[in-house]
Length: 177
Image (tube, rainbow, N blue to C red; front, side):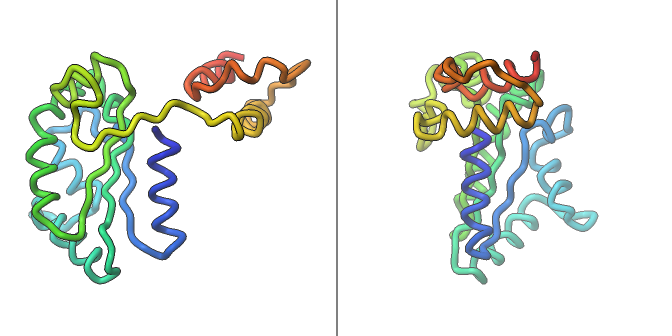
């Protein structure tokens, strides 16, 4: 999910287009998602979410694009992830009212998170869902090599690299070793 979020932001920036990429963890223990978003965008005191979205919308208009507001890992707001169920629909509505903005959220595909955040039993019941199944086979060995190098792991062999198609397993393995 993070790779996808970063890829969208990177795609925009390589074309010199604006994008906002925020981690869900930044919203942990905040007073409200809209006020936190306004704070993270470093809006002047007294600004509200409408002001912030108007500025971003105008920026998208100037660049003739739909500026993505990406919040990666809504599940990382735990233990307060349930707030999204109430706060995400009005934020989504306010963003949809503007022609040059698009909201992209990511969340781990765990039933408890999907229900707590989106109020749905399954990810495919959310708006415009995309399921990312993990690291593609063609990228798997290079990813394992990079992770092992980053964490200074010296394997005897990489014959079992196929076990790491789930990026979370690869990360946990590297961090514990």
